[in-house]
Length: 282
Ligand code: DHB
Ligand code: FE
Image 1 (tube, helix red, strand yellow):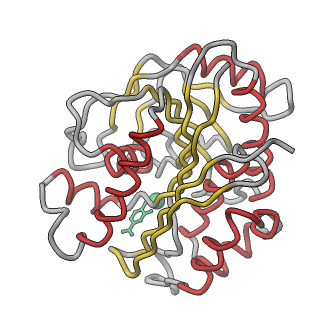
Image 2: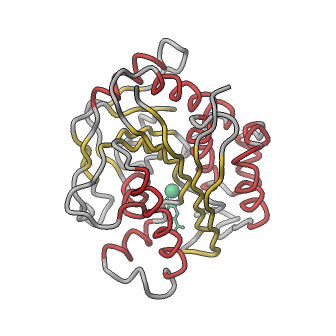
């Protein structure tokens, strides 16, 4: 049986990926962020995962603004880092677990979650930066991956409650997979930030800290907030936090928090990190 062995929430700030790529991540202003990532890297390595399910958003790179799926899942052998304007990131291609992807698809679509199935998909910084943050710069990634994309860039976005419920459905799918796989689920993005418009530069540290505090044991409080409330509190791009709710939904009740870190400001946002052991399913 496959098993979820951990959950991680982590920001996907592109300049952190670039600092790691350029070998300057241990210098200011990145040092404190990278030190947190190193704690998470060790914890993940000890969990010995076979597969990472990475819940991320595409930033109008692989999906044009003309075609934006609310939820999408990869079912490809390989996911290449996409060119976002400065060439492809020089990281290895990501290797998919196609069989587990299809098992999840065959389980969650009949359960009422109509994911768009992508048998071809290239992934942007929303996916590749967390992988670098959590694994460094290996020659080959030590895990297979399953990308799950959530629309957080074009209104109307899914609700946090729907994201949480999708996570619960993914957990059921993993529990019923006959293969022996250890799975870590990652929710990426956030924390509060707004890159555009009148409130550009917004960071709401109080909201971010409350989000980190509620996530392990009172996720229903976070699930009950509307998309408009996420934008109001966390900024337009801070709505990326709903992707952490998919991750949290996979972990059940009685989740144990291992470690969290919060640094602000970092780039144009606040860098958050949390690692969680799963609890029981409801
Ligand atoms: C930043 C954060 C993001 O989530 C993103 O997608 C792009 C930029 C930033 O903080 O600069
Ligand atoms: Fe983003």
